[in-house]
Image (cartoon, rainbow, N blue to C red; front, side, top):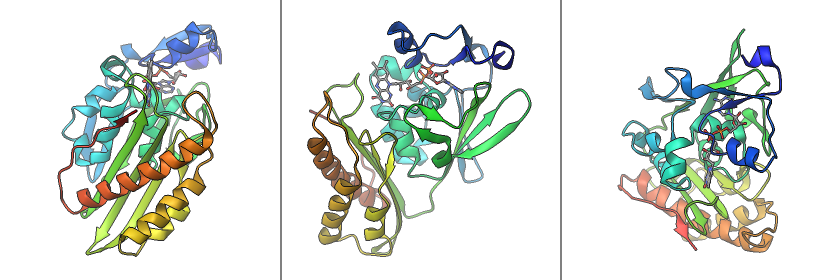
Amino acid sequence: MLAQIGDGAKVLAGGQSLIPLMKLRFANPSHLVDLNFVPGMSYVKGENGTLHFGALTRHAEIEGSETAARIPILHDCAAGVADVQVRNRGTIGGSLAEADPSGDWATVLMTLETEVHCLNAKSERTIALADFIKDAYTTALAHDELVREVVVRVPPPGSGGAYLALKRSAPVYPTASVAVQLTMERDACKDVAIALGCVGLTAIRAHDAEGVLRGQSVTGKKIATVVEAVRTACEPQSDMRGSADYKRNLAGALARRALESAVRRARGERLELGHIYA
Ligand SMILES: Cc1cc2nc3c(=O)[nH]c(=O)nc-3n(C[C@H](O)[C@H](O)[C@H](O)COP(=O)(O)OP(=O)(O)OC[C@H]3O[C@@H](n4cnc5c(N)ncnc54)[C@H](O)[C@@H]3O)c2cc1C
């Protein structure tokens, strides 16, 4: 249908981004192609060391999924998206396709090995998440192409992750957010990925901060250096959620807490995490 109608058509998934944009007249599609009538697009499956999420899987289904909880940072993310109403409708595929710079999923999934499986009427392709998100509200999808599935590799034993955001209230996007996913080997950090949300046009990988930790013990001194590197990596805009300086400092503080929680989880501690409300 997308190919037949042309680029005036828009896919409708949970409608939690598209419908508000249509109400504001920022989106004005000639046709809506409703994915909710397509069977078999909503599931969470574990297969050969990977987790598979159908594009139409709601945030709430992921929040309640024991399979998804094998990667605790995914539960942190799903449970923190907006409020119950939004989580019951909004989907993981819609969230990535929207590429909202304040969206939670891209920030979290960037710290994991994540692939986006896409298809149109003629062919399928697999795109690494880092190549899928091109810019704010811009992805690699062609107008006649769908996200079919999101595939995440389960991290090795000794891994832990944590996702933390600061929000003014549940049904708003975060002011800033930080995702940390790492693997510990004895007392050293073998590998780490740190992603920053809401402080740039897309989620930002804090590569310099990661470099501080890789192969090193996670000491107080190292954490302080990571916090500084995170502040430097941010590219925030001042807006109604806070000044650029405030967001930069906030991202540093969130990075410290997320890093400490990720290390505790990597050491086997079961830790319930929730976003921080201002
Ligand atoms: C009050 C409110 C608060 C919110 N707060 C947060 C928050 O804190 N954090 C957060 O991350 N999100 C938040 N959201 C957004 C929410 O997570 C949405 O669910 C998500 O951004 C889009 O998912 P959707 O399924 O609703 O997509 P839709 O709104 O249906 O679609 C969004 C876009 O993606 C396209 N699309 C959808 N599915 C596909 C697909 N499978 N293939 C190709 N293109 C597709 C659509 O054509 C459209 O352009 C909030 C929304 C509201 C209304």
